[in-house]
Image (cartoon, rainbow, N blue to C red; front, side, top):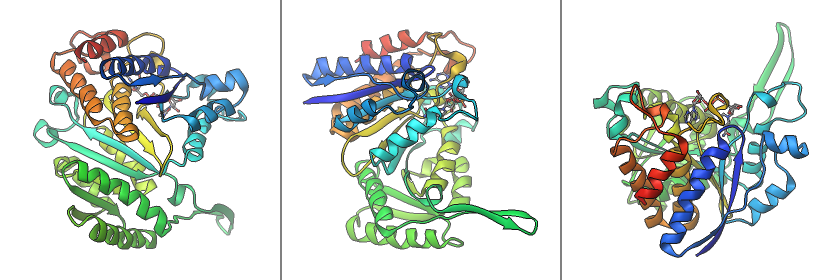
Length: 355
Ligand code: NAD
């Protein structure tokens, strides 16, 4: 297969970690006979510096024409001025919107070799392997909002709004993923209080019962889910939820494995390229030092092969290589504890060597 993968290194550690993701993809191409064209484009702070726009038209056009996009991270103190005309994060929000990426997939898996890094007890967290599917383009973040005068000062509101179609399409993404995993799907809502959640419950139930009767399906209230995640995380396989709940629950869950540097994420739409990235930010405190952990980006590249190109064997090979590198005891500084650590490029060398 020939594929165009747009690389958006971004700011801070972005260029260092995307470089390692690129090396891994080059090895996959070489070993399997695929051909990957990987042009680099600007996004975020560096794009503001070079052309005043965090998502230049040229970058957006290249992404639109590609098979998939691999992003590092954007942002940093240099662009933090609250009075600035635009910010790096605006580029990220816009690219998601322009590419119609309505589902955010975040796998949260613990690694046996790193269990001591988790803030939870080993016996609770070991074996956790959850895929969160968060609705990304609807709900309270995009509903009507406003302020008006009030006798006490002001009052403000945000509307949580969802349509049947928005719920159906993200539930299908989650249900398809559950079929490829352990066959369990959990839908998280707040149907005891919110009308929008009651629609979610009704629509999700219909989609699953009629189109995915083979799945084991249950619903959990979001407040209970917040507790279950830290008391029995192993019980969940695929979890689907709306935008705001997903934002909060995925950040809670990201603490389970104990290292941000190991968690990838994917944003996908109905068709067209998906966007694949580590969940962490641009880590300006360690940028340019060649000590960042590139594994989340390498695992994001694996997700890209799996979800955008149906290259499951190639994705498995990358995940297996990462697992073996960790089993062999190789650690970047963020996961080394008091042990010795290796650099970003050395970690890339080990994964490439393992492949
Ligand atoms: P961060 O994720 O960049 O860093 C938090 C901590 O984790 C830091 O100590 C950092 O050194 C460490 N860390 C993060 N990734 C690491 C890696 N791969 N290897 C080793 N250590 C790692 O979060 P922050 O400090 O809150 O944000 C920094 C900048 O990133 C801000 O400008 C923020 O807006 C931006 N940000 C961007 C994204 C994105 O591009 N998707 C996401 C979150 C934050």
